[in-house]
Image (cartoon, rainbow, N blue to C red; front, side, top):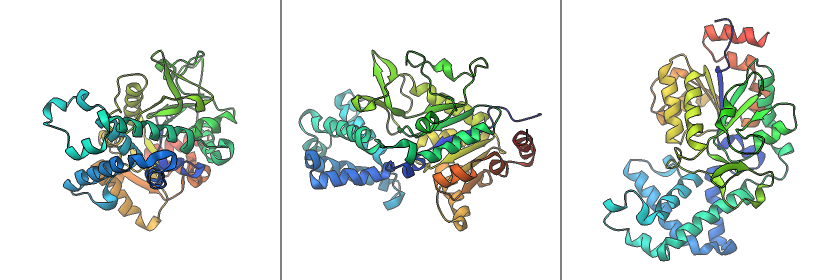
Length: 364
């Protein structure tokens, strides 16, 4: 080997990466929902009984498996996923095997479960029109330019995967000369082939939005995007675990690509991800298992003195035993991206052989 290939670095952005730009964390959105219900904003008090039932049922289910209080992974994705499942009613695959709906659910779900659908749709509407509606990305999301700086120091495209619906990466790149590939052709139609590296049409960053984007929507069953996302009433977003492998483009393809590039990477840089997603965790675990020299760098604010404890917690979430492959960086996303997301910093986490190769690249 004479140098690093274009599959050496993979970046994964979780909800925590965008919090400093003014976007609430997915768990904080739960508090906003509860406040809307409590204050009856826009008539949300009508969802109170339904919400209380669903939240109680989720915590009851987790408690059966020995998870209580803060150990319960309860956030906006979990809530919307459950609402999606319930709204299927008798169309759900498991319906023939269920004797009857819980009587308490029937009482709070409304006629024909209409309240369930309305609650789901209202949450998605508020998510896209308020919680993700950053007024000035150029200012609040400026620290995402650290991704662009890293790319400039490399001789190959950077592959960035995001679990977020926001436009932080895109807006940061729009103020630079860095070219981002999101998978849309000149007619704004989705085309997975655009993620294949083409020397005649080079891209700087390949951005894979695993859960969709606030500016995506389907038109005539084809994925497209709009510059003015405020008019989108049915954004192409997925929540929870049940829809991660949805058969429609682009979600199945994006999941496949994440698995593919984790298995090729030398270091997986994970920023602001809480390791609460079963599918994502499985891909990461399989990547670590397939190469014991592959490194997972988890970036999250915290006390450096707790690094060993945090590494063990991450290993437990991944259901993986080799803690030595996991390293942590106790920084806010903005601090890490602006000051520590460099080739010189990353090479310190790699095994000696890769360290030499990375140094070779950084000095070229």
